[in-house]
Image (cartoon, rainbow, N blue to C red; front, side, top):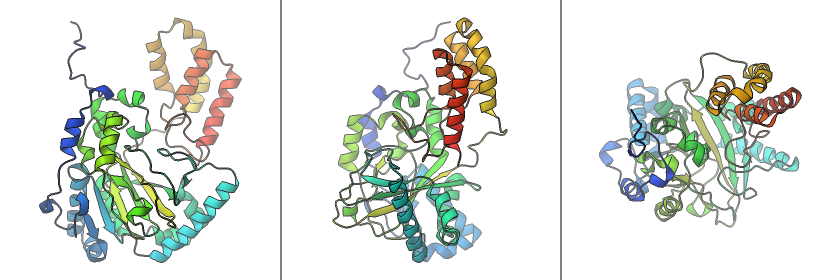
Length: 392
């Protein structure tokens, strides 16, 4: 029996095979009002919910579930994005958090931190990695008021279920700050095109189910301040993680994206597979601050905790001895079983992406050590340095 490598149903997505015509047809849809009965409106195909009116519904299990089901349908089958007006009603807490974040930004700048952005040139935006922990440690009372939002909790649970894991990063775009490039987000959106293509098609379907993207507006954000550019329904294009870097797909995005103005305390949530990008800040005096929420499923963890650092150190001498007799495939199988092959979670202050979106992994370091004939001491030093960078 021979494998038919010419059959189109290979189970993998390739950038060259993506179809802009199909993508354009999917994103030309419009929101059906019957599918969003609780929304106040859907300007530019983005459902908007008035949480001042809907907040009481979150206190009743049946109506809370009805709202959550509606939001989940939007994320998976509908526009892929929705806005919760006044999701954070305590605007004083937002102002207090903003003051804390401004202080952190000034301190990190003074310390030489770059605040590099994943999808825009460094220097245009200020970024605070792990703003969740930094706010909690510096201003715990403010943290309590800030995250005491049943609306945000319900939105997270609508997509991910209970016991989700919250993370957050501040993005501050100053007047004149440039737009990001259109992209999809974590997980597969943070891999290179080549790495993304190695994941089977069904994993491309799984990736957006494991995280939820959101943002809390820390100031009023009219269109000229550059609120997030969005392409509703673009999450429906299954090969999108292979397509988003293509110039024709990005050009289509730039021609058809939409934006909504936001007010302080509003929250926006979207499927991480939605094509999106922070907008250009063309205002004369608005410093657009958003706390970017990236919430993960509780299921994204292994059952056992494994000391892979110790495993790598123990195996390295034997790997070096056996290396000449191992095929490349056998070596990769051993590395896959022994070492951590994923860049995340990490401490992005100390372990920022280098030459890509994802920092170097333990597995990549071990492979490099074997192929280049490192000493055990050199490997130990490199692995210990990686572990130190990744610590919270």
